[in-house]
Length: 501
Image 1 (cartoon, rainbow, N blue to C red):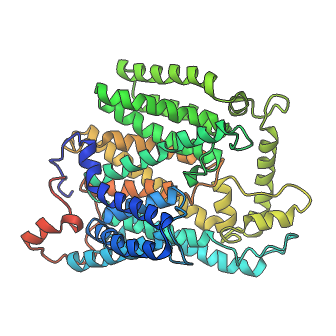
Image 2: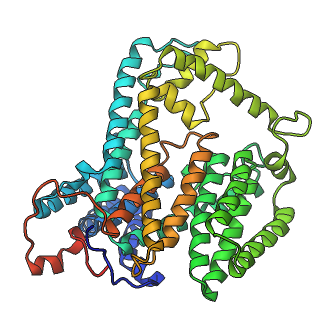
Image 3: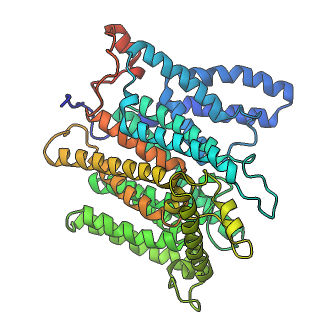
């Protein structure tokens, strides 16, 4: 077993984590405002001044580029940022990160990621979906709307860009400090969905006029079900941190944050969100190995504050829809939605029977659904398992199952290492348990939503790989590493494993 990376401090302050990333973020904000509020000539001049700083920041600290990509995936691109065809902010960041990756390989001579199981599975999923999509063009049905799905296909492009993002993530996020920085930034981004979602509810712009969503700010939370998923993801991570670090200052910040996230989950009116809220509670109790006074007090405080505020600010229709019976047509406001989803499963089974091995191609489920049921309701799968089976076939679905199994076993291996007395200097057991809880939630949410293309899925797998590397568990070198001079190890530790972290 490789030597464990030790010596990192148990508590890293917020300032130490965030301060290195503030100057580039401020540059991006200033540049966006300048481009949006200036004349074209002045905007181009300001862009010419600030863009080199941004480029230099990404090349000097590639993890900052990874964080920027996550923010671009979660948020809506600013209207002030010019985009011309393929020249989007994330494509530009991807080019810079590719340059940094090639330079890192030039210095290290190590393509370890080509032996990483998660990367190989993602690569195989991308290849299988590409084959099924090209093949699916031959039998793509003609639907009454006349929409040409092949020409408007974007899901395959998303899949390829997410594979590239995953590669950048596991290559550059390699220390404890970098992992915690990514987690902290993601939690901040996800929490921004709480005030945004309530703003839309109070202004009558919610889903159906009363269900919380945050599409105007957090693009990934534009759907109520996805808003619920993002909120529960953040809640599980915060819960495990605050119960593992019993400091009063942490609790004063974490408890209100969890209350706001749970409130947004209920305000979404998502029955899958409410069901998974109950599942999350059961998982957290089971992982706690018994009820402790501190854990019970924090849980009771979050529950009481949530119940009190829910009755005050959440629309009654949203609460009724989220907590009502699932099959009672008279009392369940979402009964028709449930019936439609059950019907979609039946039609999906027919599509799978016709194309069992490679499916109909990514993004083509809706077209085949409409062709089979032209007189009825035809919509998206709203079920990741069904979508993967019908669009990618049994082969792609099996690859996904292998990936889920590998991630869960990797986290279980790390947790057993902590329980066995290893990794004492790292203090990341709370993150490992929080990630395990979120994998359970993710697999449960997958029954109710199309989330296997969501960026958070790739982040979860990426964090799992990075945790293995931080704990000294990694693949053998694919090439022999070139000895690195001591001065280079000191100056360019962006591309080498820091023994002090």
